Length: 336
Image 1 (cartoon, one colour):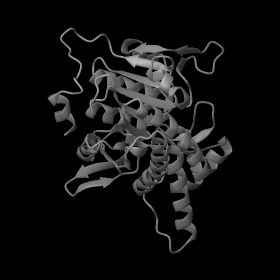
Image 2 (cartoon, rainbow, N blue to C red):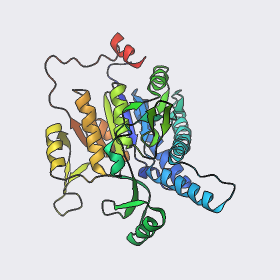
Image 3 (cartoon, helix red, strand yellow):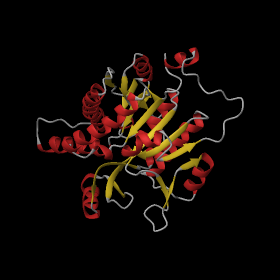
């Protein structure tokens, strides 16, 4: 790999992909053009994506069908997550393949149905925080809480959404296969929706009702793949402090120390910007000298070149630190 080019893990937000199949196709095509532009610069791109609206819609549809149709079985939540990976991956693959062909890039695209191991004793199971499904009014949320036993929270002034447990990712089950695909030159879509959450016991691994935050799973994937950069794409161009207040201010750069201070002062909304900032912090802590970016899809290319977005970096690397040589044998060993 050319030393000037980068290995980049890109995390696409589920909300940015739309709420219906029609919307998703339109939004995915726009995303594919920008991702293909990054690939055309010679960068090695790996894509993670959210599934909050999609898995909520699938789950609601399956619940309705099971309740109203005697021939439709109940569908467990992990299976709904797997369906969303296929649904979103299918659209992403088509759009990316078309965009890459237009740029005369003969790179194949593949989606990996990805399981991510979580700890069954993770405290998150006692405190659901991950938003899924569409936004609804307060009255609608109260009605569904009574009827279904769901938990709803207000989401950054945009309405109410159902929340489910969001345990931390411990291990990407298909990591070895993903590495081999990347080494073969494939553009890989993985950890869709944060990955299908699974736990391990004496019988092996099996799914559990939860949604792993896609930014944390994308960060975990970026760490394991020794990526040069993690880019989290969201609805805003930059990270803000005092968000939606008269004195809101955009941040072009954050150090780990500054990010910690802002988190302690409650600047970033839980279930919204907070997990994105934390995912970036996990990445730069694990790989000193690397950086992570939070920006909008439209500003992705500019952000890569330092012209947009919020860049989160570690403290200056020690003098003994040697950046990973992308052409070295040690790098090849990392992805085998």
